[in-house]
Amino acid sequence: MNILIIGGAGYIGSHVAREFLDRGHKVTVFDNLSSGLRENLFPEAAFVHGDILRYEDLRKAMRGQEAAVYLAAFKAVGESMIRPEKYSVNNITGTVNLLNAACETGLKYIIFSSSAAVYGEPEYLPIDEKHPANPENYYGFTKLEIEKFLAWYERLKGIRYASLRYFNAAGYDVKGRISGLEQNPANLIPVIMEAACGMRSELTVFGDDYDTPDGTCIRDYIHVNDLAIGHALALDYVAREDKSVTVNLGSETGSSVMEVLNTARRVTGKPIPSRVAGRRSGDPARLTASAQLARELLGWEARYSDLETLLSTSWKAYAKKTGL
Ligand code: UD1
Image 1 (cartoon, rainbow, N blue to C red):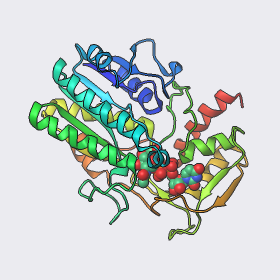
Image 2 (cartoon, rainbow, N blue to C red; image 1 turned 180 degrees about the vertical axis):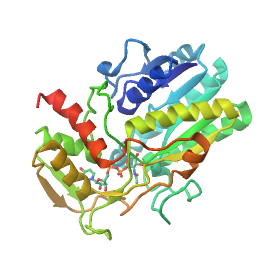
Image 3 (cartoon, rainbow, N blue to C red; image 1 turned 90 degrees about the vertical axis):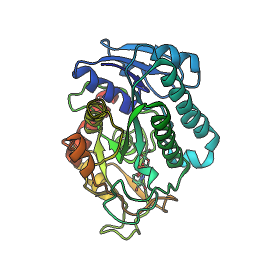
Image 4 (cartoon, rainbow, N blue to C red; image 1 turned 135 degrees about the vertical axis):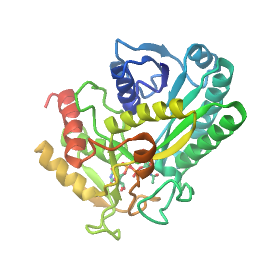
């Protein structure tokens, strides 16, 4: 299939592009390189240096494409609460442009990177797709609104979509084919990696007084190769069944901040200094996914999402880049 990967030079997008190429699709990466990197591009894929906020860029790139994978959103939860304008313009206006260009060019399928942030504070665990969606941060709100736009355009224009609610994406390509490191990361595992290779002095642990066994927050970390496979299976499903779908992609395993940190210390052989600070606002104590629906509908299962693989693949990428 001809597939446009919007945000395909980014951290998750480059892994998704690699997966679609491996499966024999004809891939075009569309990216404005604001956080995406040229080094994440593959010679087998075409590249369009364009911006979703420039409608013409998008319309031109979408001509002749059958599917678009849409990963070009801002994703820093903390920043979204301080600068909602930025998130409205990029995440919401960008979506409207994408959907309108899809109508104009006859694009059939959209695979969208949604997020567990759409759920907000969990009412029960593990979280399944029936859990109420009450986002607690503006980033999560934009993801939920995008899902609603997709549902309306499906109803009115027949565009089929898959909305993939990622839990905590982490890790690097298990075959080591992606080398670009995320710029100014705020997520736990890249921050730990930066501390391990001396790019920052320490990890700040946001709170150790939660109601969890070791007092630190529990999350469901999902390997980026597993996510990438999920995109490919979701496109297969949407095209085969001619139906849209909204599913969680998570490992169904909870790991605490201290568990992640201690595994990282072992895997890297580095001391990784850490300091406990106060809680970060809006952090639920625990978040874990039910991925049963993805299993049933897509035949998807996490294969690389154990802590060991998450951290060893990350470490390989960081150690290579920093010459360790
Ligand atoms: C959030 C979103 C998630 C989204 C992701 C994208 C929520 C509830 N979750 O994940 O859906 O996909 O952002 O960026 O909105 N931590 C530290 N020190 C650090 C960084 C993190 O202790 O320097 C802790 C956090 O308190 C948290 C855990 O590590 O308990 C994971 O944090 P992070 O990687 O930022 O992801 P989430 O906030 O869980």
